[in-house]
Length: 167
Image 1 (cartoon, rainbow, N blue to C red):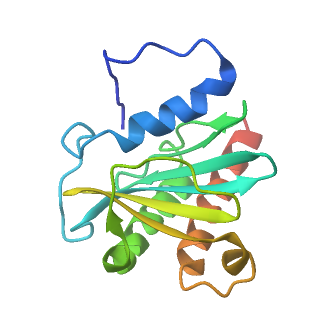
Image 2 (image 1 turned 90 degrees about the vertical axis):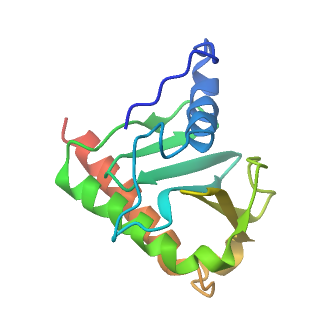
């Protein structure tokens, strides 16, 4: 997926790159992506998972086309990954898995980062953006009903890290 916007100025500060790319993703429609509903992806075409890491927030983005990236509120990030089968497979799994939680999510236009101690799952759908907000403690303790989705997103991070380490 390549998303460009003439309305946004390129960021000048490295620490602003991740939040800017995250915001661009959350404000991109399926038509702009372009991704279309299919049998495999009837409602959800992308997922962004925000979770706290120390004083920063990391965002794992996965799309139905196999694109995947990691953005942070710091200066670290990994963009792309679609050129690697392991990343594509992991990204597509997250998006497929998200559809199971569609009814738990609520429509939103509030793309703010989660409050301390929380994780947010944003679903980019063919009818707008939806969100699930849950406690980090329940996810890290594997007690949350959303643990499987979080774990699948963690696999995207693992696969992205592995392909960047081999470069």
